[in-house]
Length: 111
Length: 115
Image (cartoon, rainbow over all chains, first blue to last red; front, top):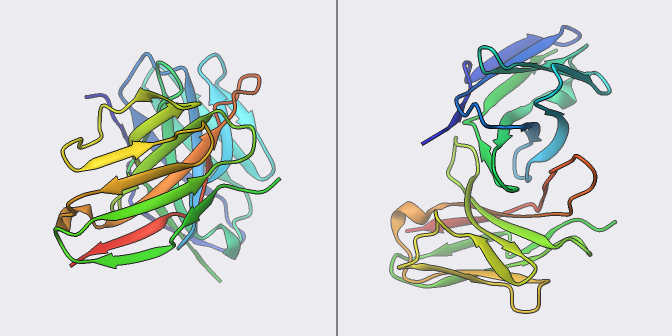
């Protein structure tokens, strides 16, 4: 079936540097995408979302980019901090309110 | 506002035993979801409720899993009998459609270990 996947399972980044997390999706009918952050022992926490009629959306220190031509989604975190260490999931929505999650990327911030 | 509550946080059972998880969604959220998250993977939807009706249970192993949301608020997820491969974190989430957002709010999860 349709699925969402990630290119890099683990990303190590120096504190203060920018992080880029990538995600490939395969369902061209998906009209909404969302990034979640999950810390150890906690449920996923919303970071930012984007609709398919947009190609960029910015939040506080985060930017999501959507390239529908190649079905690619990325999350950029500016000035990465130790508190950004977590697993990041992208998810897509096609029909209804059902989200399909990718496999996750672990971000490790080095001091 | 209070978040999604789940209990218990941890549960260890032997295979073939039964177990139940409880979820209390954010007040006013009509949609409730149960996900299974196996270690190292993303959450997988098991069942979605809209009020007290099932919207999607296509990935729920119905021979052993059941869920209900009798009054359109709290929900329980049951596994009977449990198998080793059911070891996972069971996440409950809720949502209320607001504008263009489909954000789901997740609880802390219940970590199930089947031995």
